[in-house]
Image (tube, rainbow, N blue to C red; front, side):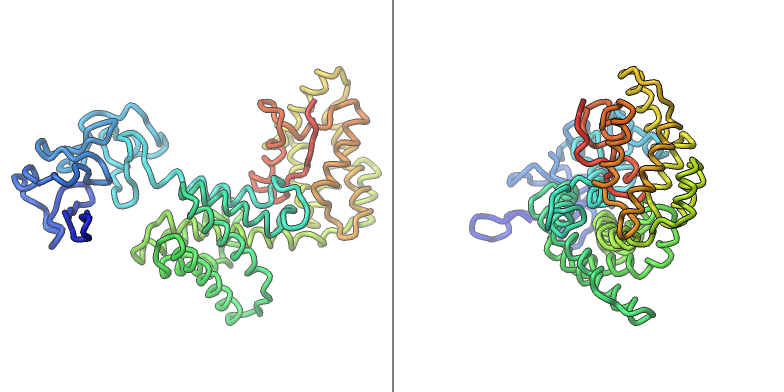
Amino acid sequence: MLPAASGAVAQSMGFTAWGARRNPGDWTELADAAARSFDACATNRGFTGHETLDAVGAVHMNGRLYDPALGRFLRADPFVQFPKELQGHNRYSYALNNPLAYTDPNGYFLKGLLRPLASIAISVWLPGAGFWTGTGLFAANGVGAIAASGFIAGAVGSGSLRGAVVGAFSAAAFNGIGGIGFKEGFAGASLKALTHGAVGGIASALGGGRFGHGFISAAGAQALSGPIDRLGGRLQRTAAAAAVGGTLSAATGGKFANGAVTGAFSRAFNDELHRQRSQVAQAPLTDEQARLAEQGQVREFWESRLASGDPIAQLALDILDNKGAGRLANDRLRVFARRHRVDVSPHEVSLRLAEAHAEATENDSDGLLTARAIARYHHEVFKEYGLPAMTFGGTPLFGALWEADIPYALGYGFPHWCEACPEE
């Protein structure tokens, strides 16, 4: 509806899912002649805000012309946005043949998919990835850092300040729920799910949506937290929660993308962060582990630490096996060793790092080290060999700190462990 200056309705328009004009009163599709003679005196903008060329029965989507009667563009898309999707290879189709979920703002790229995915990815990676290295509220995993992470994720997902503020509220509120001592059993689990639902519903309403859609997304994701907890890594668990939230939202008349983001926030800022925190203080160094490190039995040491719940142990084992992020670390060590004319092998450095980790862990009261403590002994070991402190902590492209976040992003569950790594 387009209002006049007086507040009266100047013009009403209606469209089918594919963009054909229909009667806004009873939603019946307009006959071809009526559609072509539609009075566009108030505006020529129509379906998804694009210029409607009623005289020729087309919609000008900037990049290409679109025929709503056929549900097809009149020219092939020069870009294949989703090469792994079968529908992505139909270069004449509109929005992956799914106009109820997506729109095409410029005739080339979809809207409605990339922003939510980016928002979910940020909610998984950013909160404990070591980006926040301050103290107090803005220490890693502090409420300020959590809210700031939600602010960024919300801004990316919505593209607006309002969405960013709602994201900050959602992140802080979902995280705060984890501090409530819910009782074990069905009653406690139900109350926790309802509390999650309330936060999701309020966030949805603040963002301009319906309370019920946000409620069902967050409550459903939390209600299924048991099965989700059994999935392998943090990424998989958050993706599962997003799928549950999105599906429930769509099933109740809401948008899948909005529900997916709510479900992901519910999981990432609550279950995953509290899961990470609960691992701390559960892995004191044992006498057997100290003996293994002292005798140079590196693999056995890290396997024992992994069994004790030390999250960095998996990365250390991957370094020994030269796979995943471990292969990246070994490659960087070799590059820096050649650059600084240091004759040292990755195995030799791994042996010394295991000894340093055991020594630092033995002197730590709760058994698991902070990011700074791990960074400190890495720097000391690298210095012993004449290697720069950033050997495991800077990127080859930017010389910044982001590469040290890769293990966390890949699901190793440990925050940024090389804080303040200096550049060369």
